Length: 350
Ligand code: NAD
Ligand code: TYD
Image: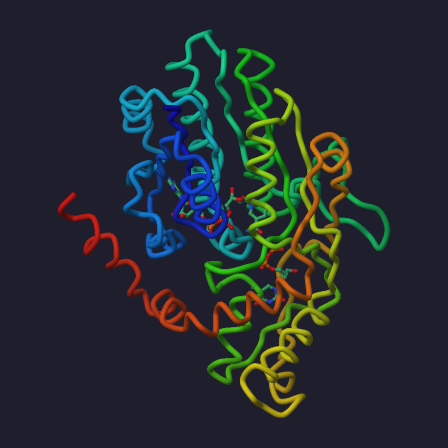
């Protein structure tokens, strides 16, 4: 039985990946290592937590000794590293946390992998999950390719860029078998409601203002989270060692248009007059250093490994809204802080 470490598995994308791997690969033991920060929520994994091939380990990747001891004990065959501080706005108010988790935490994992694998890398893989934000900001034209020079412009993207460089350096210097992917903005169930889409869904529910930064013309390329998880599965198993793959939805939306579309769907689903929710849109002070546009060219992944996004945006967006509306308790728990008690209740006797 292969043992696979997934870090950050209690977060948004990590929980979808853990669910996919636990269900699809009964012959893998999936160890989900997560610190359970404000963004980590074990309730995201309720449906698979009792499966025999799943185990949760609460740990902080910044804690070098603990990470080394865990690698020593479990002797992982593969690592898929998602644990990170992930919200740009938080990185602007508290950059240091991002340096610690995203850079130092990643180095701790690289060192631990080197230490247990020694120089025997046969069948081993260290897969680092990153973001398109490392490439900087686009104007109206063009898309990010794997060869686009790095130009991170927020503390978040700078910390992710730094971790990408370190992962590549460990491949080049020590021969560590690594692969990296850089993905565009994800949307879907279980996303923490500090990010644009779930934040607006929750605010519409409560009739609160929808804060649109600046004039709402900034553009993001949105991908349904399960399509990202499937891309990770493919790259983990078939990606070329040492390579980088861009993952994106080819689905660009200006923020204001996206929020208006969301208002339209919410009005319909909540039985409100068309135009009701749009009245909540409020233009607020722009994010400092706000990147104008992200757009991914994922043709390498499509041509070399045969991936393509399966979920059309109209379908995925509607499914996402429906999920939050039928899981109001989840939204209420994460916005009131109740979810932090889940770990205690669920794991204190294990
Ligand atoms: P998230 O914030 O929802 O989840 C992050 C998880 O990491 C949480 O469960 C948290 O508890 C855990 N974590 C944080 N610090 C930790 C630490 N020190 N030790 C152990 N665990 C820790 O993030 P997400 O949106 O699911 O993103 C996951 C990964 O994907 C990140 O690396 C992010 O950079 C990358 N990514 C995200 C997006 C996106 O749109 N969300 C797009 C591209 C890439
Ligand atoms: P976000 O979901 O934070 O993702 P990222 O910054 O990683 O792209 O934001 C998506 C876009 O929405 C980004 O251009 C910032 C903007 N935004 C708002 O206009 N209002 C908000 O309240 C938030 C959270 C984001």
